[in-house]
Length: 148
Image (cartoon, rainbow, N blue to C red):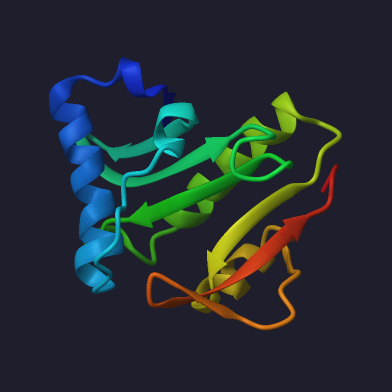
């Protein structure tokens, strides 16, 4: 697993990364929304490979980008590689990176509601009074206390 800034991507790697995100968040989930956003320029992007194949990705942001707190998002695993631990490995790599850089800060995320239990495995708790729709998918805001 490797973190990249946007300017570090080669054209073929950027294509693979954007294709994975689009396949998962737009095509599979049937959401017509601007999957690429202004935060991609600010983020560090985690890419996970099996051999030469990109199998999972995520992005992290420092404080005062999306939220006052550091954050992570756009965690996606290619369909053939699901249920093999890739998502959890990406989550832990993102958390380690954020906690190393911002050791005394909580982490806030916006999670798809059906993944609430997945994020709870890493210690996140829901802070949304009720789930809400974003791009047609139900979401919850979640919080990880500093130092967890």
